Image 1 (cartoon, rainbow over the protein chains, first blue to last red):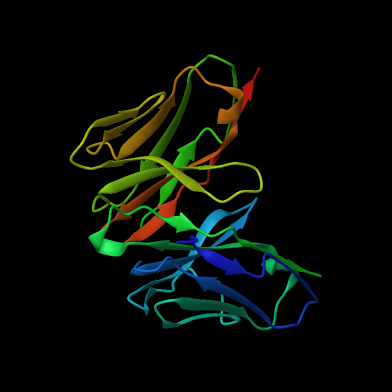
Image 2 (image 1 turned 45 degrees about the vertical axis):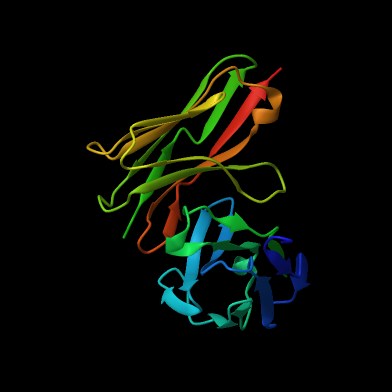
Length: 115
Length: 112
């Protein structure tokens, strides 16, 4: 397996634009997580899914953020409209879920810069 | 919900010395405690983990201890090497829900 695949790796956009980040988890993993990493706030859990169902989205900062997982092999994180304070590295991670040992496998991250 | 604290935020040691990073957690239901290492510009990767039915676990130069009564756990790195320089994150999770909450991280610098 190629691991968790995220796209784009880098995104530079202007304030007010819509941003869509994509993630393909490892095949067979039941849980998918979206984290945001900044120097000030570290690794923040935004939302996680289990068997494609959102379990906890309490970390989503505000209504501008939304996430979907339409099937077991794809998830998106959307920011609309984007703001400069959304600039961060966004990581997607997958895990085997309750059937596994709990290890998270991270993608390489999407570095977002909002001007 | 779970809250994980981590100390120190930065740590500088001489090559060959030991490094210790300490974490505390708040949710007594947490039962799985992984440690991740993140090198500059890279993704976090698991280096060692421990479950609540175990007090200590060792893997070569890395060891982790857990005190479930006090709700704290620690990472010990012995004989540090320059390639150990990275940010280390502790985390806590209740495996029945898979929700992994990270501590704020410790930036470790090993000086040759």
